[in-house]
Each structure stands twice: as structure tokens, then as C-alpha cells.
Length: 249
Length: 96
Image 1 (cartoon, rainbow over the protein chains, first blue to last red):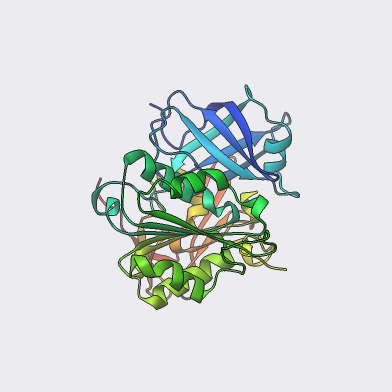
Image 2: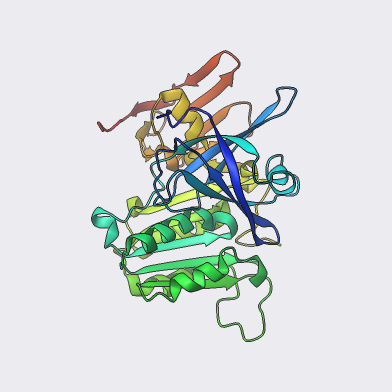
């Protein structure tokens, strides 16, 4: 078994569009030792002249899938890595990865976490590690009360929209609340503004202050959500955060 | 216009310790994000994941979220990795 921090070659076995600017890639890694929901991998591209660039991407798939992982990548126009992944990479290509990495921003359907209320807050592609948690939760049959509050700009930019609808319809204690900050379709019943104190309070209320919380998104959203949760009374050590930015491009 | 999903090119230069977990794992030979450490400047204790990460400098700088003091600096060179630990009083590794 290769060390988690050694670079190894993964083979791209699937590519699919999630939204007009977000695409998921399935990577087959024969000696993959498995991961925990919320972890990420580092991905390295090396040019013919030896120039190389590394980026971190959260794993979107649940640990129950063996020897392969999904990464979900938003295309950043002026990025170095994401345009390559979107425009160039096709099934059969090989890419260097190392991981799984991280042990803090992790949720597992075992021990106390399996039964505690779970409160997830996502902005845009910050939903990716939280999706790994929700897929893991569904696969293990956990029934703990869970809420995802998910902010997107437009309905067509909601990543995993149909799968989230299916997960929320399963009757296993999960509810998904969407907010659309820029445009809403006719008859929209969800929120229509940026995430704020009142919204967080409303979505969190049924879970109570015993919830365990994971927040992932751009820094501004993470700060607002984390500060609100601590002010409401969640212990700081149960509010876990992960910030992403232009370096994650 | 700023949204919950918009990456701000200035504010979002500041990430957190999760973003450099791979580099830290290489430098320390261990998973580091859940490791608590004390800031040598102000005494605040945070896990590495909660420290502020500046990743666009040459190398990586982790700062204390309370006092903004530099806690760790990691510079990778072609021949090795330099870890400047002057800003950290201690790190506590759990026995597996």
C-alpha cells in the first residue's frame, strides 16, 4: 500500500457535467486505501518542460466506493488547473494525485457522530466535501437529523441538484434548504438572499444547539456562518470550517 | 456583486490550514489539520485547520486567527522542505 502522501497515478474513467461550469471526474486508483468523508486530495499537473502545479480538491464520493473517487471541479476562468481539467482531460487520461489528506473536516457515520444532528452549510462548490458526507450518510443508513443549507447564485448553478432532491426525499431525516442569491425561477419557495443570521437560525432550529456543524465555501461565507453558529450557542469545537479561494482553482 | 459563492480575489487569499494539509503532511510526516498547537505570540490554542493560511506567498504561511502572528512557515525547495517553527509554542500529536 502506497503512503497517502506519495504521488501516484490515477486514471480518469468518467467525466460528467454537473452544471454549465462544474464537472465531476471519476478517478480510478488501484491501490487507494480508502478515505473519510470530507477529506481531499492534492492533484499535480506537470508540463513537458517540468513546470508543475498542484491544487487541492475535495473528494465528492463516499468512502464506500472502493478504488475510485470522484472529484467535482468548478471551472475558474483564469485558473491554471481547472480549465485544463475541464477542457483537456478525457477518460483514459492519467493524473497524479496524493491523499487522502486531512483529518479535521471529516464526518463519519460511526460513534457519536452517527446519531448527533448534523448541520451543513455550503456556498457554491463548497458543497463538494459535504456531498461526500451526505452520500456516506445515505449509504450507511444513518437516520440522524440533518440539514444542508446551500447557497447558489442561480438554479441552474446548483451542483448535485437532482441528487440532493432524491436524498432529501428518502425520508431518512435529511432536509435541504436552498438559497438563490441572484435569480429565482417563478414560484421559487426557497430563500432568495445571501446566507445570514436569520436564515441560519431558521434552518438550524429543528436540530437544536447540540448539532455538529460543517461549513465550506468562500472565506466570507464561512466567517458569517461560523460566527453565527457560535453566537447561537454551538460549542466552537463542534463548528468545523473549510475555506476555499482562488488558489483552489 | 458579492455572493455566497463568489470567490473574492483579495479576501479569499486567506484560506485555512485545510488548504495546506498535503504540504504539512509531507513536512511533518503526519496528518496535521486536527493537531492542536499554541501560538507562541499570544498563547491561543487552535487546531492547524483553524489557522489562517496564506498560500500565494513563496511558500506557505500559517497565522494565528486570534493575533495574526506567524505560527508556521513552510518553504519547499528543489532539495528539501524548510519548516520555520518559531511562532508555535507546541503541537500535540495524539498517539494513534
